[in-house]
Image (cartoon, rainbow, N blue to C red):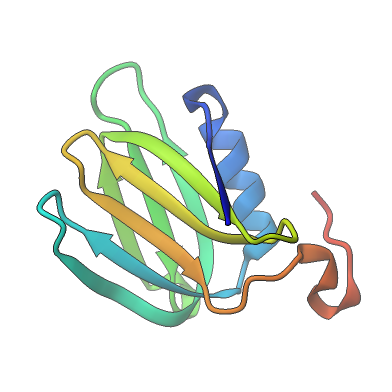
Length: 125
């Protein structure tokens, strides 16, 4: 599995594109505290988007929307890094947002696959 970190200057564009490619895909979200304790926020619910709300100060946030009608939101305040993991064939398998305190949220797809294979359609980017 490969991971690559997204440069902060590309967070908005990358997360918007990621959200369009994976809208409605089933995800689980794990929250890990700075001391390493983990808990599931959601399991196998549709993801409806991940958005970066960036400011010129320490009020930056990344927001994850999921569930039926995007009823569940999770906010990561003061994000410090965003990484995307890919399977060996290049399919995106997870997205991890880490903040300055060492906490992180990981959005993991139940069935990672190449976007071009979903329903046999090539999505509009």
